[in-house]
Length: 339
Image 1 (cartoon, rainbow, N blue to C red):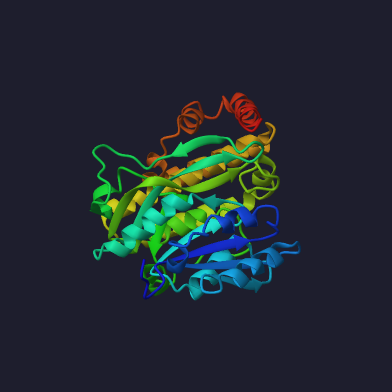
Image 2: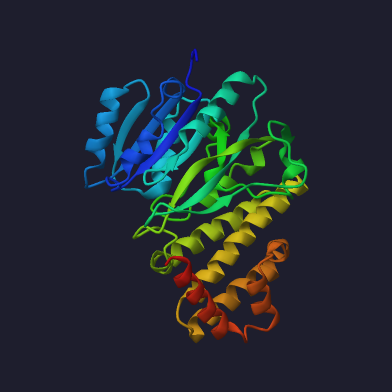
């Protein structure tokens, strides 16, 4: 492959990921792939050997790897910093404890190089991999009826058919930079901001085959770990409220984009209810669920009606009488899932 410019910036947020970072960075090391990649590792205040390991890759491949150190600002700060420095035409985030399928990423890069008609967003599939034994748990496919790979869709055309998750998307860098897309710092769960704040500006989307992103599930301290979710429930509330404000402010967006933002907010509402349910049953958490759902129904009915989670709907329809049972079942399900 001949390259005149970097095709893809990979932003790697790296906070104390020394046990995993080599697997992450190794997944980019391919003689055909590296010349097209701008890999920006953001050392987010790590105190372990992460930086020392990253420097070995910089010494071997100085044209492709960079390390930028900052004080700990969380995932949002790392993505913001990498985006400000990005040299690639497209931008993708990869957590420092995750990795990519090298062959599939090469296919994506080749597509971007060989097609002059560029889409704002490129969507690929990803999978969950259990940390304990490396077993693939689930493949996450962005499917809809009669989907055509490599066909460039208008966003409004597919907005009601899909929901684009952070690990699935690669976004045109200029779109993010020109509209100053920023994530909240010192805050978990900002992946929702990353995929929803650009929505008002996205015009085109293309879907490519292949499972690119490999998401490690089940490590201690992971933001989706039950204990972490409980500890950081206020941060999830903060992100939810930021997306509700985004929905309210984008009243001039197309109806399709408005409905898509409502769907994103509804997903966050569902997650917030599940976090509340994960605590042991009490009047306090029951009232928080009721207040959240009732407030959204009153103020933003489109968000409320976009919720398609049966458990949340049943809680609401029974006036929360089944709350103790729902709380117990959610905690049991979570325990069994991560065994």
